[in-house]
Structures are given as C-alpha cells and as structure tokens.
Image (cartoon, rainbow, N blue to C red):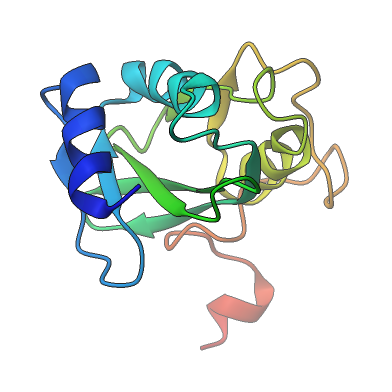
Length: 151
C-alpha cells in the first residue's frame, strides 16, 4: 500500500489526524484517544496487516511528550509511524496497545520508567530498569540528579 493510500485509509478512520514530517516512512499524528483504534484497525485491515510493533518510544519536546509507534507488516513489508503528542507533562497518559501487540508491554514499561508516561489499561505497568524507589524520570528534560546538577 502506497503512502497516499495509507493516508486516505487513516484519514477515513480519523479525520482529525495530521501528517507527520518523516520523509522515511508515512507518519500520522493522532489524538491520544484514537491511537488504540487506529493501531487495532491497521493490524486487522486486510490491506495493511500491521502485525509487528518494532519500536515504541517517546521524546520530551517543548510542546509535550511525543509517543512514537513504528509498525510494520511482515506480509506486505510496509512501515507506518504513528505519533501521539501529550501536552500535559504533569500527568501524561495514553491508552496501551499491549493488547494488540505483546511486544508493547515492555516498550511501554520502558517509556513509563524513563519518562513517566502512563499507559492506560496496561497489564503490569511498573518500572523496568530502575529500582521501585527511584525518584523521577531520567529522560525528561527537567530531570535533575547529582550528575546533571554539576553541568
């Protein structure tokens, strides 16, 4: 499926989506409350069959946290990037996609651990790398510790 066809398909599902800026893969910026629906639809649709979530990460930007999903189809070999922008840096949250792709469980735990972004309805949202009593989220731009304070 070509970029134009993917854009038409996703726009038919979520008219409020916006095109992203990636030149490598088709990228779509979605409202947080629509990401689960679009992800499920991309996996189930017979012309997309996005059966593999190969990356889920986040970025701390001036306009909020960007949660980024890279999906691919092992059948058709096309890739799509979904992005959700969370302007609320105090209580950022987005629905989980771990019920769609099992690999999301660990990706979402990593993002939670390092950015503090909550994934609603995640089956086991707890820290993955850091100790349970760790204070703060190290990949946030406002994070301070003894190393960053000295700079």
